[in-house]
Length: 328
Image (tube, rainbow, N blue to C red):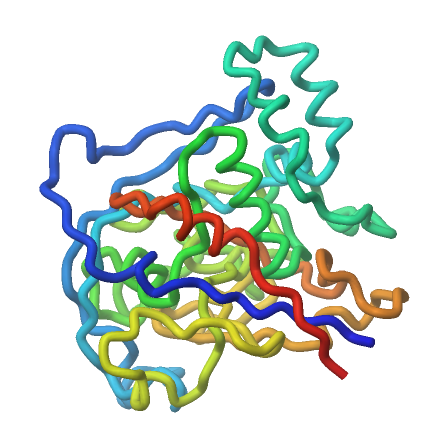
């Protein structure tokens, strides 16, 4: 039996938000208790933008249209992709405890994560020898990325989640309406991104390239990033009225954004969409395939967001506890 997960996430997580911007809405650094690790969060102002790309844009695909206006409420977004340095603390309980023994943990955050749901042990090094310290974590499933957010919530008491496709594109564009956040000239990609022409066939340390106008690094390239959405090719033209994102109802495909070290320039555009595939688990020898590891997706990682308005406790629990259903 193959398993799939139905993410029954209330739309109230994303809609009907209101916020009077105050001095508290600013960039901050999230301390990862019981470790030397931190995660920088960037304040993304709310606003309205045109999502998708025009047919005239080089590399335009049908799933990027029609262009449409989307209103985005303010949120914080990770300045960088989540690195192995932090992800390994989540993946390996013993590592988290050993690290805490060497680093003061006045908030007793390790105690708070003792019962957190964690990935099954990977059968190989999921970095595949490309680098670990300061490199983006890769090869996790969307399900695993969501449970990482739950672990971070357990540890910090702050609600974190994956971005929606709309939030991701809005943050990537950083006020631009060009193919890339820096303009239409793909020859400038080398300044902002790791991709097929300059990566030498592997991902790189986070944050080595220039950030976009809002201070976010590696939104173009390095690794693709999980979003909250089901991937629906014609979603833009058939989105239910008022729906903020496409809830996941099927295991495949889900929406991934940003392009990677292994992709060409057109795949790194702000509007470019990628659909996840079962083939991303092709090297997994387990039956059924792992719920936690993609094994053949060394080009996929993620970053997290924090909405300004905190959902209710019941909504948070619903988000972090997807319903497991059986498939063929």
